[in-house]
Image (tube, rainbow, N blue to C red):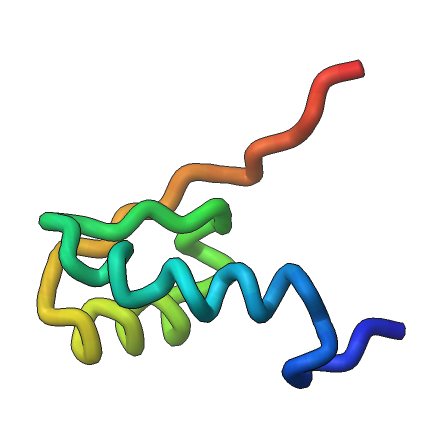
Length: 61
């Protein structure tokens, strides 16, 4: 099980990139809007910019 703390390299990387991402005109999330309406409206309110969903994005093999 992964821990959501400062030892998770992916979360550390994402945390460093977040300030640059919120400077954009809109944010794109890899999720399904019908499953994550609460999360999307949270980011829309907090970031004060359009939030779009695209997903799920699956790797093809």
